[in-house]
Image (cartoon, rainbow, N blue to C red; front, side, top):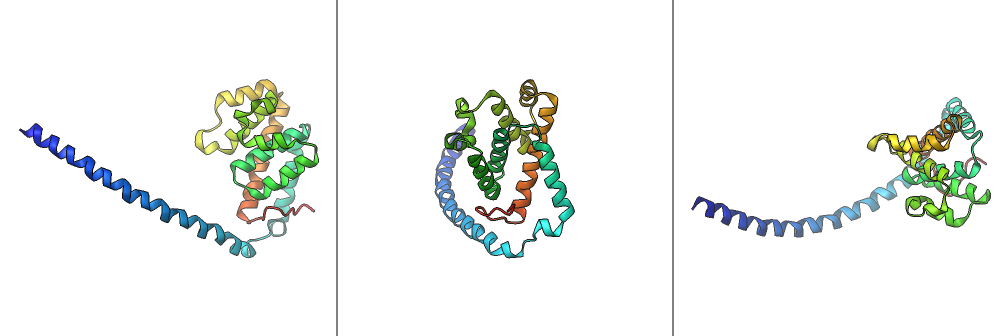
Amino acid sequence: MMHMTTYTTTHTAPTTTHTAPTTTHTAPTTTHTAPTTTHTEPAAERSRRLDFAKSAPKVFRALIGFDAAAREGLDPALVELIQIRASLLNHCAYCLHMHTNDARKAGESEDRLHMVAVWREARHFFTEKEQAALALTEAVTLVADAGVPDDVYAHAATLFDEEELAHVLALILTINTWNRVALSTAKVAGTDERR
């Protein structure tokens, strides 16, 4: 008899659970409205953000030097692919706009630019070396998620010599820093303050 009571209670629970999704289904509509308000707030705040280059000129010049040193000896097309992938992952529209334009000016194809975000599904657009650099870019950029997996690092190490690999890593570090500078100081996509 006790078993029967348990069965009846369990049978009633799905009815209550079935009603809950209706309430939960309404919540995303309210949540969906919030990002619109949040999205418009940064635009209003932009005038209050500091000019990093003017406020910390020595740090800014050091970053420029680090960036220039990181690029040395690397294929310019690879440099832009790395910078585009990291900027996509970091949601940095300012840097993404800048580096896709730089890549176009350097002769990069529109097809490859469109495929960077989904490179794993479009491997035939990229060399094995570029794929390894993109995978390493993802691992380093998203390091808090899972660290840098041994297999990703090892694969890159088989395709780049130690000096090249060090420069690839340095470039990944610099673009991640630039992304964070641009995002935290609310740089506007479509502007290029290098000129």
